Image (tube, rainbow, N blue to C red):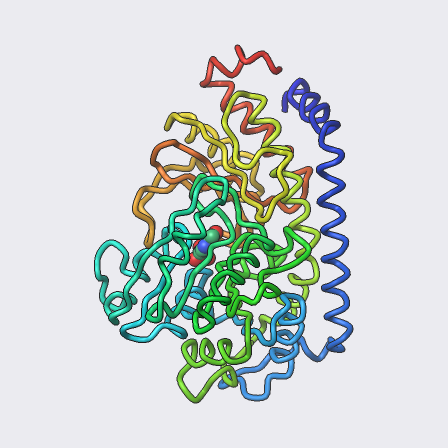
Length: 420
Ligand SMILES: *Cc1c(COP(=O)(O)O)cnc(C)c1O
């Protein structure tokens, strides 16, 4: 590793003291909240044992779900290894709450993998559109702003479900803060109390003191191979929310009548408890790394979203590279700094659910686990890369240095930028 680059990173960090302190404060409060939930629900060693077969009377699973609900500020929760991914949890929530003839309204364009679920472009068999659920969007700008009049104009008696994505996903926009989400939920519920609100919470968990479960939203969904799995959970997802809506989601995940009473936890429980316990810490490391990356890459002359001073509501750092070769070099740098498959060179591939080819730099212990340091980049203009995760700030620094080396080797401008 270049001593010059390491020196530069260490120097840059001196300007991030305040930003780091802010993250530590949030992390401390989240640690407190998680610990209290474990103690309030008397988590014990026998809760790790897990069930087999139908999974009836799984006291460990039930305790985990009560702990989860408390941490996420909701009445109830489903936390299951049977959820295949974050997309699956949001799909279950949508199908649980939408009925034929209902309208679904989203704020901004939902995450790529949800477009086939909605049937946004074409009526995919089995999509919401195929079941007669109409869809529309309220425009959302890059700074997370929207027009209240547009939003209210999109709602009526037929609108039954409103979808809010907290994180920017693969879009060039800031994450919505929990307080912004609260304002949106209030605005909707005052005029249209019958509308149920679903929040896609992927990448947002523990980046703020509050979670969207406290905003009056009906369901909050996320993946366990992202923030709340603490980098340890090998698979699964969660849906938290009101008892009524979680019960509908449980019926959709299993079968009507079976509800959440079935679903063997097998050997998943210990890591789910432990991952939740550690999540506030690892999310804080990831947030610090994101802030550092924002500072470094903006100094290098690239556009970043958000900048290092902005309060965050997710762990994603977007960096605009403008050229496909820089995007590939960036991802190569991330891959080269990974503990697993560091020798592999990332290339764009078509992925199920995504329209454009996607480059994914991910040398992770959990396949696609993105609380570990990863970089995703859809091969489309403006060739932005979405960097997230890293289980320790030190590993993220090593990753950033590796990326700088790769960019330097092909971008003659980066030297002219005269930073280093
Ligand atoms: C990752 C993500 C999803 C989908 O999660 P998968 O686990 O990849 O299916 C949905 N929404 C957002 C904002 C995400 O970041």
